[in-house]
Length: 452
Image 1 (tube, rainbow, N blue to C red):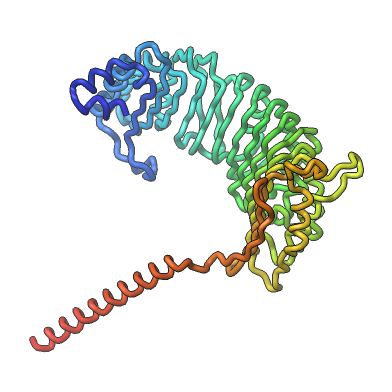
Image 2 (cartoon, rainbow, N blue to C red):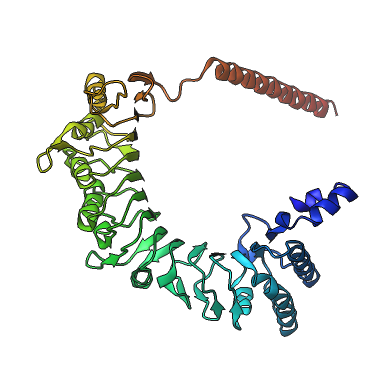
C-alpha cells in the first residue's frame, strides 16, 4: 500500500516516505502460486539483490518501529558461487530481522538452512511462521527470547524440529503431520501452550499414550486421513483448562461423540464452545452418546455440529431429547448454560427411507430451552438456534432468536428461484442458438466441399 501511495505524485511520495507507520509491514512474494516447489523458476541473483535492497529501504523508512516481515522467495543455489551470493543477500537481511516482531518465511530448505547456519539474533521476535515442504527444521542458532507463537504449514508428514524452547510457546500451529511419538514429545514440552491447532495426515500413537496440555484453552484438531480410527485418539489428550474445542474429522466407523465426551470427562475441563464438522458424529444406534457428551460439558454455551447422518439411524429429534434430559447428579438439565445451538445434518443415501424429525417435538424442545428476557419464570438460556436436516431432494429447518419465535421451514435445496430459472432458460436458449449456428457452418462447409 505505501508503494502505491508514494507513486501518485511528488507530494504524496514525500508524505508517504516521511510516515514510518506506513512501512511497518514488509513483504516480498516472488513465486507463482499453486505451482509445485520443484517446478518453480529460480529467480535471478539480480532480482534477489533488488529484493534485498528494497527491504533495506523500507526498513529505513519505518524508523524505529518493530517490523512485520514476510519473505516468500524461491531461490535454490546450485553452485558455490550462487551460495556465496545468497549469503551476501542474507547479510543484508540480518539488520532487518533484528527489528522483526513477526516473521513469516516461505523459503526452500537450502535457503532456510543458510539463514540459520550461524547465530541469528531476533530480540523482538514474538511470532514465527514457516511455510515450505520441510522434513527437518534446524533452529538451534536462532536467539529469540520473546518467541511464543510458531506456525508451520506445508511441511512433510514426519516433520522434526530442533532448537526450539517449547516451554515458552503460547500458540502452536502445525499442518499435515503424523501424530506420532515425535509430535507427542513436542506437545508434552509445551507446558505454557494456550492455543493449539494441528492438522494430521496420519496417526501412529495408540490409546495408551497420554498427551498432557495443562494450559491449552483453545484446541483445534483436524484429521484428513480416512484410514485413521479416531475413537481411541481423543482420550489420549488431557486438557484441564480447555474452553474451546474445534474438530474436523474424516468419516469414522464408530460415532465420535462418546470419544470426545471421554476426553472431556478425563480432563475435568469446563468446555464452553464445541464445533464439530464430521461424518456420523451423532450416528450411534440409540443416540446415547450425544447425551453423554452434553453431560460431560455442563459449562457448554456454544454447540455447532455439521456433518452427515445415515438413514438407518434414528432422527435428529432423538438427539435433541437430551437437551431436556435431567442430570440426576445435579438436578439440572444437560448443558444448562447453552446459548447458541447449530446443527446441520446431511442425510446419507441408504436403502430405507429416512424418518424426518417431528416438527412438534423439535419445537417443544427448543421452546423449553429458549431464553425469554421478559419472562422471569422461564429459565431457558438458549438465545439462538438453527436445526437443519436435508437430503439430496428436500429438507427441513427450525430456527429462532431472542427477538423472533420458532419458525419451521420446508426447504428443497435444489429448487431454483424465479430469477435463477429465468437465467437458466436464457443460457439454454443462447446455447441452442450457438449450436444451430455451428451446425449451419458445418453444413455450409459440407456443401462447399461437395461443390469442389
